[in-house]
Length: 305
Image (tube, rainbow, N blue to C red):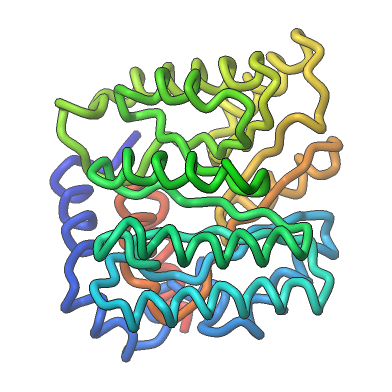
């Protein structure tokens, strides 16, 4: 069962409310957010990654933030990404970097954002690390893919995310053959003109793009908490003799931890998406919008304090 549409829309509205996002920075990690956000600074995030690594889990760190509208903020966010890469290298954790380009100035200037991305991806390359560009709403999709293609002319250690609810996803998968992609169902509210609205259709398209990317020989990160999809992927890779080294599963920090560890025991790469930072509100509200279980999860966190 999915969230009733009015409630989903309510949480999506909250996620995009700039005033609430600003206020949330003063609140701290309230209403259960501390269960799904690994602290407010690099040190706390690295500590969580070390704990996860000890359990056989690999990670990706994301310094939360998006929709920056000043070059000063975007430059500061870029510097923080570089500090995060430095911290990962100096501590030796098994972890790469995820980021949103609206935090790095995408809405200010594509050229400015590309300059910031070159600094980040170049530094990651020096550390033999990888950068994942998170996909945002549909209005930023083509910009994201255009910048990715520019970066790929010089760097092979950068990839992005494709969202299965977008009608264009299947075509994008074919166009991005050979590039490491994280495949997700999608977490933004989009119009019927650009995105499937029916859950069954989204699930069907999700599995189709997973199969297409795997069969093309491309590295595939399957990011889902849906155990039915996971079971289908495992069966499909076995049937088609696709090696475990060609794909990985990904889940969010704080969700389905038992299933994460179960996949590790079965010999699969399981990467945990570990968000951190003070700009947590938009991320947390989107998690609430996705599934009713997440709302109950947050309420338990609130009343257990």
